[in-house]
Length: 145
View 1 (cartoon, helix red, strand yellow):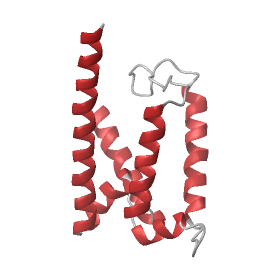
View 2: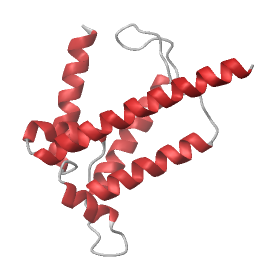
View 3: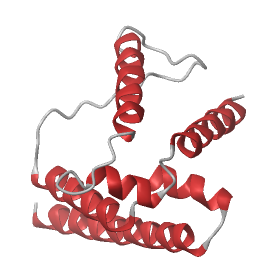
View 4: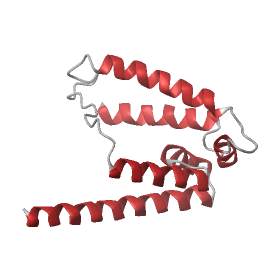
């Protein structure tokens, strides 16, 4: 049941990204170009997403179990650290240069074309490099203690 719900949720999310224009890199870059030919249309998409997420998190905080029975696991980190800032900068630079972020890039694979494929391959490579570096760093810290 959980796999089916994940599939349905992912399909709805992907369809929403396609319909909203988030899979169009030119539209996204136009939205990010606040000092030039700014295209504000994605403000409504982001505002709607923030509103829905805020409502969902409000109700999630009151539950100990998710709707399908798993334990509720909400983020607990409250501090802004170096890793968060560097990750946010890397995400923002990648988004600004390509017009893709992970969700829209995956949804764009359904539309076709080489650009989203190249982005997704690069994204997966970056995730793998991070995992390797993070494991090395953790192992080094354990040896130092």
